[in-house]
Structure formats: C-alpha cells, structure tokens
Length: 284
Image (tube, rainbow, N blue to C red):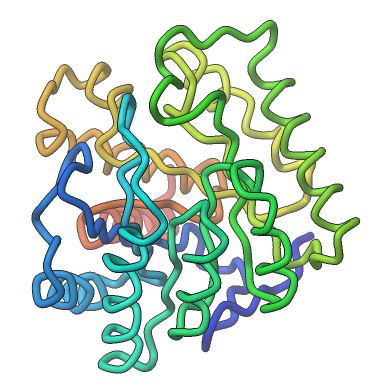
C-alpha cells in the first residue's frame, strides 16, 4: 500500500484518485495549444483557470515534446518558464506547481522560484545532473519512459515486449535514483503513452497496467488529446479529442490510476466525480 505523499502544501493520501495535473504549455508549438499561453499574462490567467477548474497540480512546460519537435536551448526555456513559475507561486500561494523539463538548470531555478516538483520525460537520462537537483531539493520527481527523443521517437519504435521493456526501464531508473540518494517515496512513474510508442504499444501498456502497480509507486498517465485517442474517436484535430480524453479518464479511475495529466481539468474531473457518485449510490 502506498504511503501518503506530500507535494507542496498538500498531502496526497490516494483516497480521491485520480488526482489531476493541469497542463500549462508556455510554448509556441505544442501539438494542441501551442502559442495560446506564450506570454506571461495569458499564462498566469490560464493558471488561475486551471486552479478554478480543480487542478491538484499545475504542470508548467516551456519546451514542446510533441513528435518530431526540435529541442530549445536552456536559456530559452529558462526565459519562458521561470517568470511564469514565480508569478503563479506569488499570486496563488496555495497552488502546487510542477515543472515539465529534462534540463537540470531549469529544474533547479524552477524549484528555487517556488515549484514543488519536477516532471521529467527522460527520467534523468537526458541530463545526468538532474538527479543531483532532485536529491538536493528533496522534491517529488516524475520519471517517464521514452524511446529515443521527441525528434525521432515516432519514426519507427520497435519493441520485443513493450510492457516488459518499459517496466524494466522504470525499475532500473528507480534503482539508480535511490542509489544516488533520492528517496523512493518521492518517485512517481509514467510509462510514457505516445513517447516512442505506436497505437498498439499504447494499448498493450494500458491492458497491462497491473505490471506497473507492482513497482509500488504512484502511477501517472498523460493521455490528453493524444493521437491514439484521436484514432479511437476518429478526430484528427487535437482540440476535438476532449470527449475521448474524458472517456479515458473515467476508465483510468476504474483502473485506480493515481494521477492524470490533462488540458481541461474541469471536464475530466467532473466526469469522474459524476461516475463515482452514480456508481456508489446506484451501483453498477
């Protein structure tokens, strides 16, 4: 059984899963909302909206990691992210801020600016200094599996056994981090849906989520508006995939997923709350 986890001012005791990360992209080119919150004023306004929508955590990212995207410099990412983190933490002192980055300097400056945790798509493999930052700050740390880099991850991902390989990667990273002094209690795992995986690979992972629960760490899934959702509901435009995203979130509640990362917290959270209520009071 998982122990409660403190993130910022809140203790997550796993009684109200799933908890929701609200996505805040400070980018001109993210796949579904690039450019919408690229300036400071719009970003802070969106953070306020996410809080009002019921986000448990605001996940701020300054670099698009969509398929075939190019990386940006550390300097550019710092320029995009840190001012937003500072203002959000100042204006909404009760908010829990996560920063979506694989760069250790960005993580360090974000944590100094008031962020409470780091969400790293590379699990520390893109920047070896990340482990020291996470250890020194003692912050919660999301480690995700990715095959390749955002630039090439979807070219032709091949696995012999995707569930086994992703699980083994996460096991190795947990062992590495703990060996380096990171508390295992601070680690959250993410199998990385869509990050170097085909439609079939994603379904195989979802069909076998119990394999990841055996790692005894909180599980995060990022499914919001992704292409595999679009394929199922036949929606090419990412913004038209909200209904499919909500349907997935209800299913994830049934599968006891701990965290979901979504763009529209209100729609997803309300759907889960309604489903929970009807199930508890009417059965089924």
